[in-house]
Length: 502
Image 1: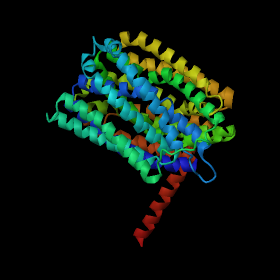
Image 2 (image 1 turned 120 degrees about the horizontal axis):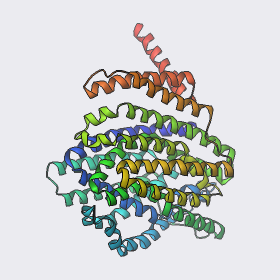
Image 3 (image 1 turned 45 degrees about the vertical axis):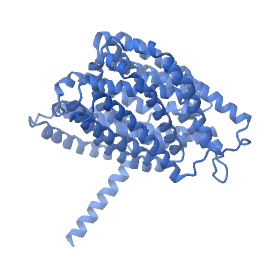
Image 4 (image 1 turned 30 degrees about the horizontal axis):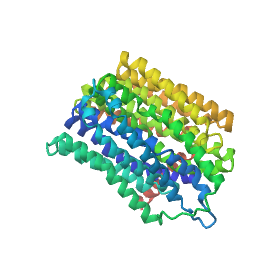
C-alpha cells in the first residue's frame, strides 16, 4: 500500500488544486454568469458526449489495465501495446458516430419538449465524442505506465482553468452562446493533444507492433473480455448519467442546471478516491493475472478503508457547512432547496467509494463476466427508480433513485465478490470510521451558530470539528499511514521548536 499511498497523496494535491479552480468555476462563475438553463445545457452536452464515448471506447481503458501485464516481457518492452490500445476506440468511432447521426431524430425527440436548447446544439456532441475518446485512451496508457500525475494535472487543473476563462468571457459578453459551446468543446481537444504529447515525452509511442506476439489465445481473451465489457457498459455506464438525462427530459434544463451545481458539491467527496483507484487498479490486475486472491483482497481492504476514510471526512465537512455554502455562492437561494439532494448523493458516493474496488477486482479476474449481470441489474434498478421518483419529487427524486440503485446494486456486487474471490473489504477500522463520522456530525449539531457571517461560521465549525477529527483518528488508530504522517509532523514541529529556542 506504500506506493499507492504516496502516489495518491501526490495526485490528491493536484486534485485539490483543481478542486479550488472547479469550486470557483462551479460555485461562483457559473451561477454568476450563466443561467440555470445554460448550466444545464453545458452539463447535458458533456454527459451526452461522455456516454457515447464510453460505448465507443469498447472497454479500452479497462482492457489496457487488464492486459498490459500480458504484453510486457523480461526486457519491459510493450510489444506493440499502444497500437492495439488504439484499435478499440478507432473501431468504436467507426461504429457509434454514424449510429448517433442515424438516431439523431429519435434522440432529440426525447428532449424536444422540455430541453429545446439542447436540441439546438446537439450536433456538437459528435466532435466531443472523438476528443473525449482519444483523451481517455491516452490517459489509460499513461496510467498503466504508472504516470498519473501529469494527466491528472491536465484533467483537474488545465481543463478547469480553460473552462473558467471561457465562462468569464461569456459573462462579459465577449462570447455568444454558440461561441461558448464551441470553445468549451475545443477545450477537450486541447486536453487530448496535451496528453498525447506527454506520453510521447516519457515513452517511445509507436504504432509498430509484433504480429507474432498477439497469438490466438491472447487474441481470444481480449476479444471475449472486450465483448463482455461492452455489454456491461451499455447498461452500467448509462446509470452514471441517467439522472441528468431523465431530469432534462422530464423537468427541463433549468432543474438540470440546479442539479448540476449540487452534483459538483458532492463530486468533491471522491477526489482522493480517483487517485487511489488509478494507481491501485494496475496492481490489482497484475495480482489477479496470477490468481493471487490473497494479495488482491488485502489491497481491497486497504483501498476500501482509505476511500471510506477520505470520502466520509470530506462529506462531513461539506454537510456541516452546507447552509454556509448556499449563503456564499451567488443565487444560493436557488440551490438551497437541494439540501436533501446533497445528502442522498453524498451517501451514495461514499458507498460507491467504499465498495467500487470490488467491481474492479471482479473485472480483472477470471470471473469478469459477472460484471455483465451486475451492470444490467444496476441499470434496471436505476431506471425504474428514476422513472418513479423524478415525476413526484423532481431532483430530490433523482438523487433518492441514485441512492436506492446504489445500495441495491453494491449489495449484489459485494455478494458476488465474496462468493467468487472471497473478497471482504470490512475490518474493525471500517466500523470505527463510520462511528467517528456520526459522532462528529452529532457534535457539530450541538455547536451554536457563532456568527451570521457564513465565512466566520464555516471557519469556526471546521476548525473545531477538524481538530477533533485528527485527534480521534490518531487515538483510534484507524489508518497506519495517517498515524505515521501525524507522528512525523509532530516530530518536525518539536525539532523546529528546539531550533528556535537555541
